[in-house]
Image 1: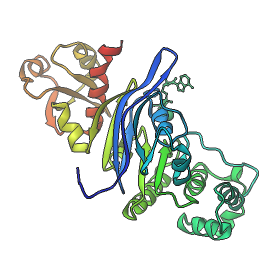
Image 2: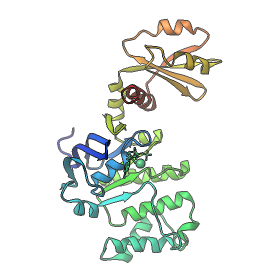
Image 3: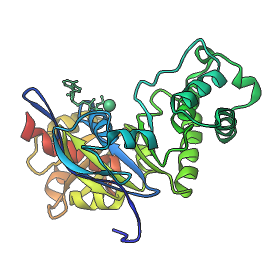
Length: 308
Ligand SMILES: Nc1ncnc2c1ncn2[C@@H]1O[C@H](COP(=O)(O)OP(=O)(O)OP(=O)(O)O)[C@@H](O)[C@H]1O
Ligand SMILES: [Mg+2]
């Protein structure tokens, strides 16, 4: 890790237990200043719970560390003030205009110059005059999300926590959203973002993959892919579905799944593919680079047996 860079989030053994169920299980997380840090994992894996614990919105069951230099166990109030949090199902005031929504949140943060903060936020997010007077309920999904980002950034936070911010938003609006986050990153603003989209994961400079509350892998894309120690083949041919069904339980097959109209199959790096490929000569086999998605599917399937 770059020793020069400030750690904005530095937590160890982050744990949340509800009743008998451990939903976040000893997660370590280090996020550096300016990082766009992606949090990935299937539904219910503990992403939202972890994000809420890091920013002081949810008490931790166990663990220690700091967020923006403040102790997460004892200084949640100070953390909350400096964090911009866009919740998974963000709420806007539907009957208020865009400008009024921004004003309300500026007031909630007790900002000194509310007008300046609202104008600056609208400028940054290219919210024009006509749009500013539209009611929130009239906005398209993409514009609602842009306004929610405005609300989350109105107090100029150093850290943004974005929980699936682009779910249900069209590709163009998603691209603009990510360009904006990249701009913030180049100005030293740090983002921790949960997502289910692979193209978004690829725009993060660091990633963590969690499943069943456990951290399965973290690092750069390259670290995560090479850490899996697998090689991947693209298989093309008629009846590829049948091949998938037949090879699903093969002891040497780490994972196999559809990718568009072909299949991706991964095996351990030191295993020879020839015995399997020779059984299916009618298909075209080609070794390809293991993608981030292949790596995530592998990580997930390698855990299934432990939790079934
Ligand atoms: N207040 C609560 N009481 C009991 N269980 C909870 C509570 N909040 C969350 N959970 C459980 O904790 C687990 C993790 O939930 P969490 O919302 O953090 O997952 P997630 O990774 O954000 O999922 P998604 O991708 O669907 O948003 C789930 O099994 C969920 O049911
Ligand atoms: Mg969630």
